[in-house]
Image 1 (cartoon, rainbow, N blue to C red):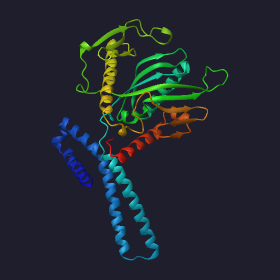
Image 2 (tube, rainbow, N blue to C red; image 1 turned 90 degrees about the horizontal axis):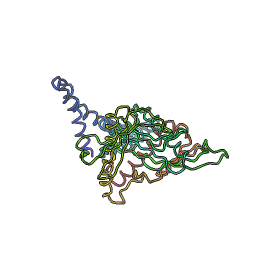
Image 3 (cartoon, rainbow, N blue to C red; image 1 turned 180 degrees about the horizontal axis):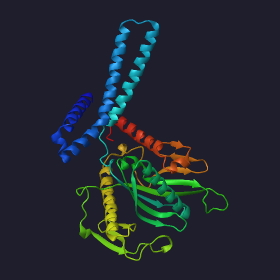
Image 4 (cartoon, helix red, strand yellow; image 1 turned 135 degrees about the horizontal axis):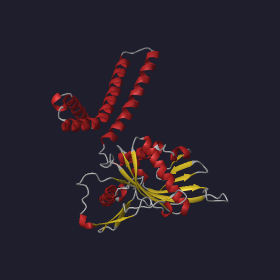
Length: 358
């Protein structure tokens, strides 16, 4: 591992020199390519240098012990040795994680689908809560959210809503959100004060970016146009700008009615279709992996119950890792990092133990 780390540091230094070369700076394409590689290596190099500093501190402290210091100095040296050993162990663990192959989808934008499940109108209202939660979280990360399609109810819920989140690392943070989310609360429509349980299903799909990732034969799709409408059937506009695309081989149907432009709606609908086809291919590949290598954090199966939001107890519990937070208001307002970090840490720790790729 340390030979590999030294080679990475040498490459990083070489990149520093090349990026300072005027001929490289004048070649925009090459400069951007090298900058990307430099950025990808910087975190590993910084952590490796931190590790080496701890190693150096440990050696220096041990040398001081050989000089037979007095009792007071001895205690200080022993404290330094303990700090250095802890630092070495921690940075070594962190380096192992950094060196693991990354999920190729981690840096991609995502398409999120939320569908109301069991619970009628209350489930649709909960779907709206989840939509706002992800919008707030995206905003806190500096990501951009754009609506693709929705089926709103008359009292502010959504039977279904599809939207896109664009931003660096969006999939790496949101991929653990796929599954069934359960809410326990007294609905606004409930007059007797009884607590109801409702569900909504979330699917997070990485966008298929390159042309080479997903090719769609034009003969395999049917495109229909219709008039976009809002809650209660009220027309958003009087032209047939909404788009429905049917992928004949798979039977997948996607719709988009967010934009007034038929061209823009078609473009968005095609992105959703590509993401869905890409997800089918991804799941096919992953299904070939042995059962004992499935992630304890969850397979991302949309039928898996992953989390409960209990409003009377102000509690959010993630069932995959047994993690509970007692600050539900902050969580649904987008303060999700503590739980997402715990999911990522658990997943990484398990893969380290099993020797799997991240």
